[in-house]
Image (cartoon, rainbow, N blue to C red):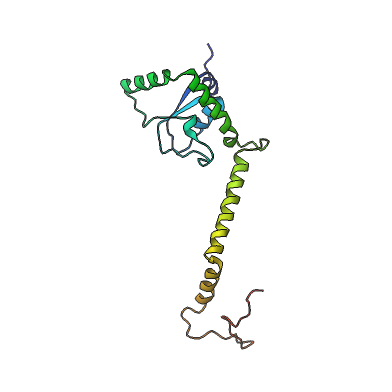
Length: 174
């Protein structure tokens, strides 16, 4: 008798228990999805990747907490056994649709890498719009320029040229 590997066990199982590990996201969860095994998680606060693009409720079963007493385990197993084949197929179909976004495979048109790049670009665009709207750059530069004179009553004079070092209208460092 050869013992099954975890990956083999996931592939032949309908459901994979995915208790939370050290972090809000862990490999058990993603390994289950890659194997086509419906994840059962026990932490409703678990953060999934790209939640704004993936509806995890379509393929993840969420339990409130993992209870290890016999009655709770029996109840959970009964609940899972009652899930119809039609529902399992729907979960797996939704899983397949989300899978490309959960893989770091740049040969796929929509994958984790391209999604991360898109998210960074979108956030950068939003940040630039925010900065422009609130004139952040102008405020920052004004604050920075005025902080040069903090503690000085008068702008200091450059001893070699006699010009003011703090704002004679000329740009510094150019």
